Length: 89
Image (cartoon, rainbow, N blue to C red):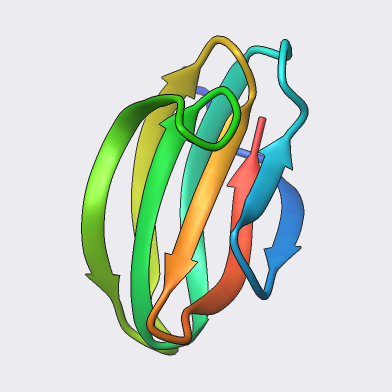
């Protein structure tokens, strides 16, 4: 019998650029639910860390799937007015 796969993420609301997950912590990002349109870029580690996802546009009311892992914390750069909530594992 097939089993249901359930993905559950911890919400991390963001209204400005900042550390989504503390430096030194590994994990995964499931996605970003956008509240206000703008641009997002993700980095492994602190500000200035390795780029995981280059800058891309986000649209209000849209869930943007971001199935990426990180090994040294997660830093999000929110630009052009972007706000929303990240789903973190």
